[in-house]
Length: 90
Image (cartoon, rainbow, N blue to C red; front, side):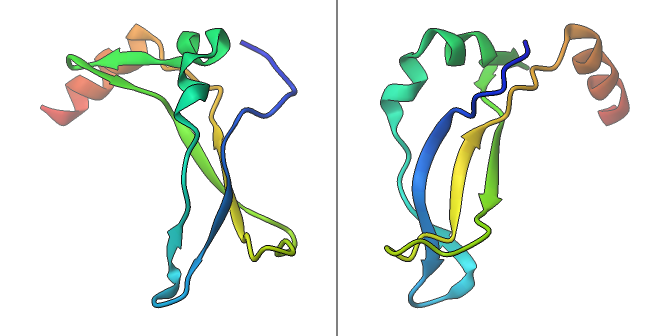
C-alpha cells in the first residue's frame, strides 16, 4: 500500500522529566485504530494481531516540549515473510 501521508498515533511524545532521553512518554490516539486504512495494516502472526509503528525523533523540540512522535509504519509482512521468520526461529 503506497501513501505519502503519515498516520500519527501520538504527536506529543517527550523525554521523561525523571529519566531523561532513556524514556519517552506520551499517549496514543486509540481512535486511529478504527480508521479503515489502519485496519488494513493490522496483521496476524502466530495468533496475535500486530500494527507496526515508528517512533520518530523530531528535528526540533516543539513549544510544548515534544521531542518525538509515533506514526504507523505502512509495511505489512506477507505470509511468505512470516513463514521464513518462523523457520528461522526453530
